[in-house]
Image (cartoon, rainbow, N blue to C red; front, top):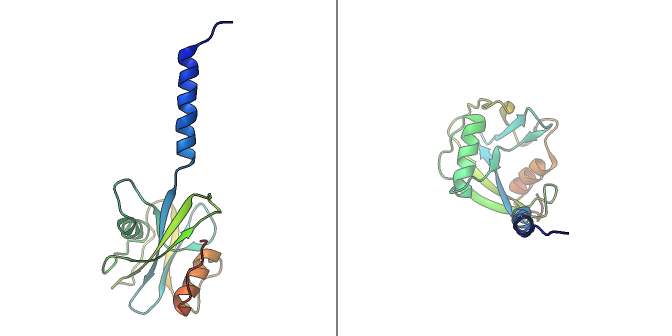
Length: 156
């Protein structure tokens, strides 16, 4: 039987590339944004249930803080009054054992928020004592940690 050395070599290289890609650590951001009245900015996506903080993935060449500010504007139209401050970093094993979420705090001078992009169904500012039904567990936990001054949990 004749061997195909180039094909075998290409298959080995592909396996190495796939293994490296699969083992890649990923980083996303979420931002707890407070308006002047101390209300929390939350949003609802069109493709998954629940209320979340603004956030998303960190792009190549972008810092996590830049991603936090960008995602907040893109999803809600809200501009932060200053650079967001890193609060904590969490492992997100529900996505993968290599996924992490950088959690930021930011403030805005405005209480105007508008659903942006096609992926956002609804946005709003909510009193921390009266959060909307359907808020995700991770979002509620981060708000609780913020209010109580508790140490951040290991997992998102």
